[in-house]
Image 1 (cartoon, rainbow, N blue to C red):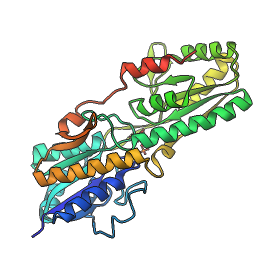
Image 2 (image 1 turned 90 degrees about the vertical axis):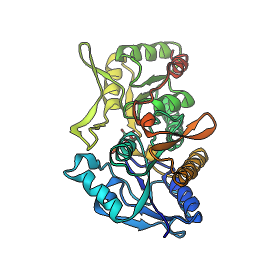
Image 3 (image 1 turned 90 degrees about the horizontal axis):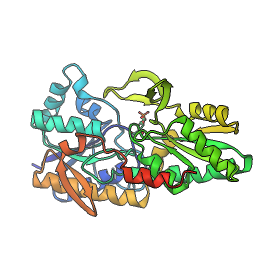
Length: 348
Ligand code: F6P
């Protein structure tokens, strides 16, 4: 009997998920494995919700954004009897191995299911935030940077025409990877990210210096997780609600609006704000992300065939390697000082 391999996509979607599904499925089916897709991340393993991954199912999906399997932020560890049910479902359905495609939350669960429940797990690192350790880049990040850069370019022409400051809010929950890369590529005049302190007063000084030197507009790229000074000595991220998801994540959003108001008040320059939001996660993946995702999918298939469980595919330099899942989820990969120094070179 053919060994059954399941694949699931968990957490926020991102461009390139379908390329991973296609690559892993093609490689493993050709090697004689039975491939099954799990619907909506860990939710599908809790509810026994599967789809057969046939040749037809994975045809024409390479360039498509989103995930044909659906996704969710379900955390089986947080549901009453969740893990036992999940382990039971895996055994009852003869699932020999599972490829989990996700960020730190999804891969954290995969790591526990492997370490504590002896399930055969292989991980693939995904997130537009690029904050997973153990890998140089996650797929989806490059596409998000391209989208954010294109939008910064567009904001330049309207800001310049109206003599305005425009604050653009860019995704990245706890890390400023997309903001700093798109900010550098798009020539943002000020960049604010969670990893490095830049007060509102300093932002205003930079803008004032720039305008005093003859410029009539400015673009501020602010990470949604950038901290604003709430009270004396207390900096905090701006959240939309107090609610947290099943992994304890807050919903960020609103920093650009607050910052724009403050910049206008302190500098006297007319200021607007724009939130890029989920646009950064939608649409087709860049060629870079399609190739990276394809390499990850093939590597995950190779790892399954070699019985290399408890590990994830990773990019190190130019090579795709297998690293322990633990290494990917143990800490967040923060923006390095080198990039912050580079960004600051261009502040007025
Ligand atoms: O983790 C990816 C991400 O897009 C973050 O950048 C963002 O803060 C979060 O997901 C948004 O989550 P949701 O789509 O669940 O609102």
